[in-house]
Length: 74
Image (tube, rainbow, N blue to C red; front, side, top):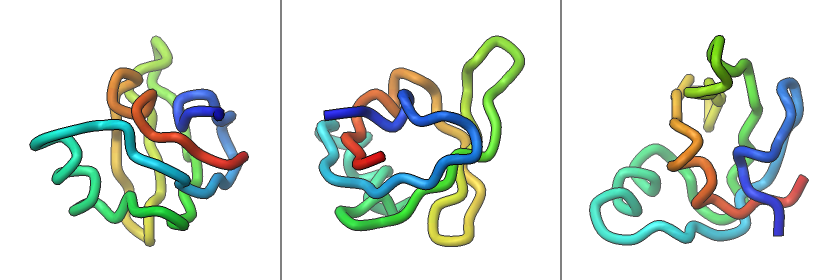
């Protein structure tokens, strides 16, 4: 299953599953990264990290190590 960090800039993907645990999982859920949520990839940083996403109307920057824990449907 593709991960959020695989999505290209400008694409809109749907969250399928969070593979994170503990505090990081709680943080992701608090940011609105729940199953079925639509996430738009806005832009990547100069070195490709972090990436800026639009999640439920909020702009959120996630590092590649965090976005690789989010399974999506492209």
